Length: 338
Ligand SMILES: [Zn+2]
Image (cartoon, rainbow, N blue to C red):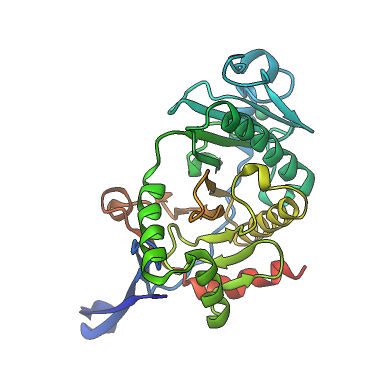
């Protein structure tokens, strides 16, 4: 398996050194499956300061459609011919149709009664119930609409990550149309199988275990690692080899998934970051596509809250980061031992 990177050196006359020539280094890394490239800059890492969210939390509370006193009145119900339940509930979690759909079957799961939960305060119960609620909906759709093979559970936490409602909620999609992520991954998986005769996910985890630089934990039902060519400032990947569909995420697998996600949230919180994107991907009926989860934190750049997504991300489809995946691995590993 190839973990290709190209080291780049740039030179310029540095005003901070009397215009003497100086060198700067960067890397272009290529994803071992898709070849998708990411830039890693050699730039001094500045500590992110925790933003005071009090104003945002209180202002959003006044107009929140997901707070318990109003959620039943203002959120839609599923049409009876499309789903077996009008709404799906599990503990405090509640799954309802997305009122602003971008596909045939899109829903949101309100995760808990609380309007705001800091990343470090999500509990096993809240996260587990929220996932179970999403899976109940997805399993139902799979039975009734078998062509909806592109299933995913997603999270935009906080406005910085694209969340338009502060109240914690997951986004669920069950579609007959792939996103670009699947469109790039599926042919690459088929090509890998044809060329190597083996499974990409098994080989990738084994290779990362042997290299030891980015593997976080591989002793549970999931293997956790830091992506070699991240899709964000860093990109934590949890591979679920024993599952094919949401219906398989039960018992110990669910427990390990939730524990790992909570570990990632605690690590992101420790860096004073408060926003993230998460996707848990399934492709039903495809033996080559192992379900997996990716989590990327979202930040803005001080002092002007500059977006982390510039022309490279927006128009060249290229992530840029100043954080080396190997350093992130060293930092996050202890959260699996706590
Ligand atoms: Zn609320």
